[in-house]
Image (cartoon, rainbow, N blue to C red):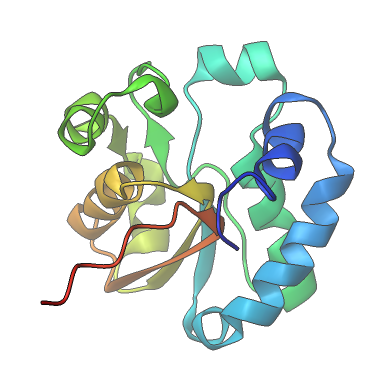
Length: 167
């Protein structure tokens, strides 16, 4: 869905207000909308939170979505296949796409114990919101460096971009 005034409340309720019941609804939407991607996936992996943010929030909304999606689809799920190596500032506070990209550059890696699970596999990466794609890009790069054959992405919402002007 478009991440706009109509959807922002529900997405943020899941993300920051312990409204975990939204994860069930969103996972069903992801399954319906992403069925062709899910069918290709060997493994479902969430975008990880840094341990301090996870500790403060008590849950990773992307992991909840990915786990529920795995339950619905019967695909394998690994919440630890990708790790966030350092704490980063909230992407929402970043003033530009370039700043967002700098913020998450090198912030993700696949632990050595998980490389065989990733190698030569199609990984479905799950996140809540796609804004500029900086986080997804950084995660996908880490997965590809670990040997993933393909990285597919599902998010519940995307920030709409204005269409280019046609003259």
